[in-house]
Length: 587
Image 1 (cartoon, rainbow, N blue to C red):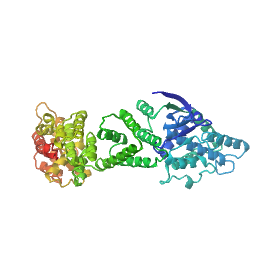
Image 2: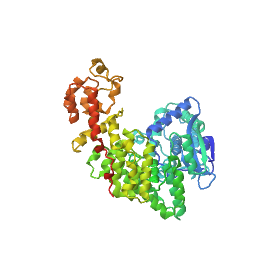
Image 3: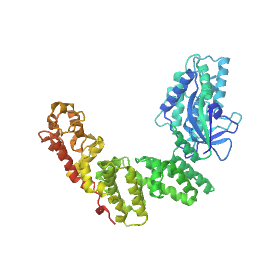
Image 4: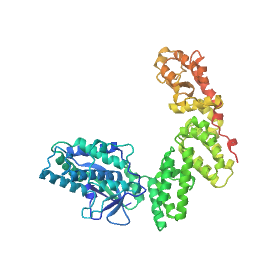
């Protein structure tokens, strides 16, 4: 990888007779909020007050169409666009100063100040365009942003001055919000007879003393590797952005006219679908590559595989590829939806969506390539694949504590079996190949001894147990249900009471996080009981809507045998709640 790093000021970056910077269409739209603009202003003015240089981060560039003076910005577009808007605001203020007496009204309109205003205008406008080439503005944003951006930086014959003009409205585009925010910051913070002189000196500081590391790379993949090594804060680019760029470049190379809008629209729809899921775009592409293309890859290697694939596509295959990405993202947005969670998922008619409510709540992702493959190629297996995925991962990872890597090998083998055309029962056989680790007998023993400090896991387990006992009716007001530790997590009162009989060689904390020491309780009742002793908790337990919690209230006291019996009651039905049986597989 060949890179060329260099420390540069904005005076050096935004200058040159034929210099142009392009934000490629694959780049994310301008996204800075007013808060980020205000933070930048504070940083800049503080560095000016301290007369110190200030490091603004990296700008990563790639030659545009082989030109020596034209560059694509692959990282840094947000900052360069923001500073360009600031320069346009300062340019407009200085240009209108001489005839608009409301601008810096305390500053005299004498020849000296008019010269200062003219100098400010010259410095600011020179960072927007090459003055000798009046149409050569240095920065051009992507298709979605550029019309608005050019309108801001080119129309500098009017300033925003009144409260109504600089008021940031919710419906304003972000570029407009940035412009208004800069006006407000200048009017609020630069005042008095010396306002114009201060603005001039601040502008010179911004142009000369703010430093960027500019890095030129030869191609997009080098840019990605650079981000991996720098772990750049505020990075604008990801693998998904690079893939989008690669597809657009290949499309434009394959088709005589640039009709890329349809691809951009398809890509944006895909991203929108993914954002509705609990998966990010890069993970989606990795899952897709494993499920559909059959190649296991890391995030770091992902772009290389996708890039090589796209290189071999003509326009027809490229269209099919992007449509398939969109189709799979639509399916993913349903089964991996942020909103599909336990226990509301129990009301879903489709069995696979019921299972996925649990999978999403438990945050399992190892199964997603298998589910994506079944969704596309074997939809008739979607229900059993989802149920087996849930039961296997719950037994293997959550209760057994075995590695995610070990689980992944099992899922990879299942996908491989399906692609080889094996029958469903043969293909899914790896799920049943670990009897000694997570078979019914071992699973029963593991869950009877299960300990955890993760309240969400324990709440899920006891909620599933409750549903099993009430024919899967419902868990009312799940968000209002808390996990109650019968021996509390702060057991000082219990230790002081000395009624809890400890087995020899154990301490009370050995039993607090045992699954048998936990139950479900209404939020208000749980908050009331907190760390109280058992005799004082019983009344609240008796008022619970959960049968198991009511049963606990009938006990005279709470001892180790009660914890063990409660855990055993759970273990006796666990294999039915999380079944892992070949009988689930339908051919």
